[in-house]
Each structure stands twice: as structure tokens, then as C-alpha cells.
Image (tube, rainbow, N blue to C red; front, top):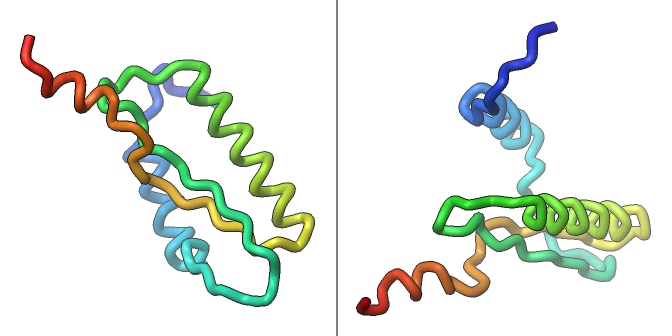
Length: 94
């Protein structure tokens, strides 16, 4: 099997996004279980990602899976801005 040297998000993520939508994986409902939520910050606006980002996402994934195994109503919410430091710094005058 030939593995591409560069990741092509359009080839991979489109397929999985459609699959998740068809299976209603983004749906969440309040119920009697104890809630457990992790809010995922978006990637840096600078576009520079590093091993720390991967570690952070891996830890979040482990925590959400553990909460689900414990019977909690776990919800992993993507895309909220947590600091906007890079954006604000770019807006400051030189």
C-alpha cells in the first residue's frame, strides 16, 4: 500500500464528516447522566501546529472516552476561541 507523503484533508475528512452526519454522531441530548464536556479550541491563527497541540488533543480524546466508559453524558465541543492572543497581537500597531 502506498502512503502519500502529505496529508490531504479533502480526501480523508470529507468521507468521515459525511459518515458522522449520517450516523448522527454530532447530536447530543441532555439526559439524567452526569454531564462531562471538553471544549476544543481552534488551531492557532498563525497556522503553526506542533507536538503540544497533538498532545493536548490526545489527552482530551482519552478523557472523553474515559468519561463515556464511566457512563457520563460526554460531549466534545469543537471550535471555540480560547484566547485569540495571536489575532490580537497582529492587530496591535508596530
